[in-house]
Length: 138
Image 1 (spheres, rainbow, N blue to C red):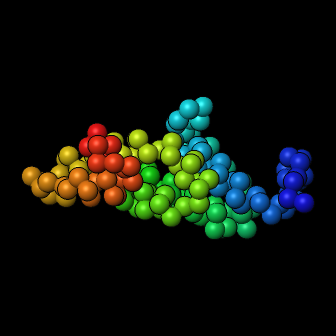
Image 2: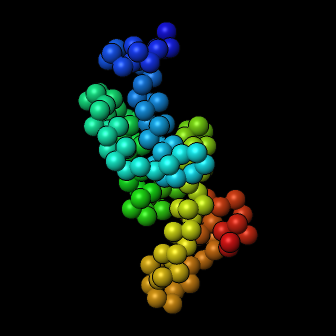
């Protein structure tokens, strides 16, 4: 059974779904939204306490890389990864769309692609995963 009690997990007994759920925790807490608060030191602490096989799992590494892209302002990579993510992960990440889009638009406004250069709305819509041109224009 994949169900384990907290005490069993705390005692170090392996749980086959642990990497997946540790990654969900990292994704849910990578920034402040709703009842979740970003605490970089808590993230670092959580990562430092993971067993090596959990820390180096594909799930956790995915969450760490996505967290890096988000906080580095690499909106192209962030939304590209979102577009290829499983449905549950995309739902979790949806909470970060507005702040990521705001930062992306700010970068574009500052001339990240060249001063005085106009960026096509279709590009903004596609890269920021906006549902419509109107949403991309906001």
